[in-house]
Length: 153
Image 1 (tube, rainbow, N blue to C red):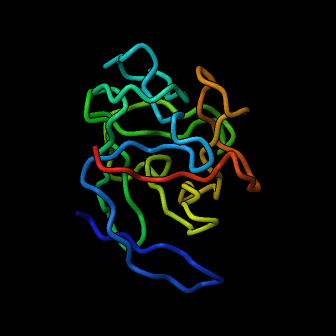
Image 2: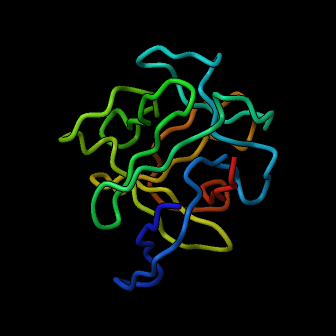
């Protein structure tokens, strides 16, 4: 299990174990999870919110990079979740690039789960609404639709 540094309050961090391979589900609705649309292995395929079926396109590998930063890699395609559009765009999958800050994520502990934020834009991953089929995007601010749980796959 990778150990990730997780922001708790202000600039205080704790170390948290996360599964090597996980389903990333909404804390308030664990039946909705990160999914690669259409089980695609193509570069640029959208990450969406979908009903949990435990398929390969819903399993994610957490790869610690440095400090509190990590990549989220599709176990199905081997591609990384990547944030587009100046932090407000869609989340898609792309090959890992060492210098690509749009692929680096960090966690903040909140309300029994985690916000998953991009290291550069401080955007949090969320769907527009907690509905299956909605694309994952970058959002600023926080509410219950942006709190995630990592469950071992």
